[in-house]
Length: 152
Image 1: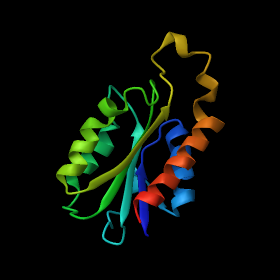
Image 2: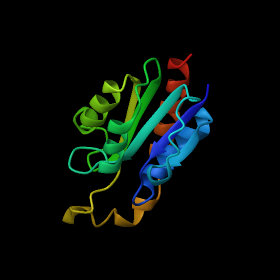
Image 3: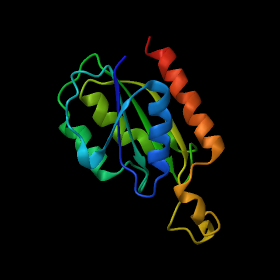
Image 4: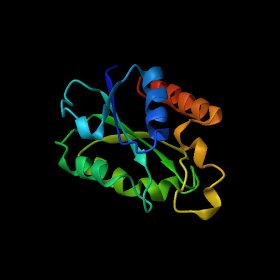
């Protein structure tokens, strides 16, 4: 299985999640700013970023709209969010709709805590924003293993 992960990461946590998933899947990694748009050779494509105002990064949403039709290809969505996985369905809705409109079949979704720089209450966790929590790393690893099983 050939897989690709496209992501945007401002502070490093989403990059860490992308790398963890890529390690398990054996995926190619591309940051949103350097996407090569060579999708034909991939069976599975992952899309992820931090959550900003209950949606993925605008550049990722723009990319999703510009994708060619990809009937029969599988995809997954991931994010880091101020509320972790609590509102994942809401946070992923726009990206999910855009990907499905391009013919992609979403086979999994993952989210974990990503910080909230706008919150005064978040100042104690600020130093950890660039590091992945070991529990989040394990959760991302397990998610990737589930994707392997779903993609067979």
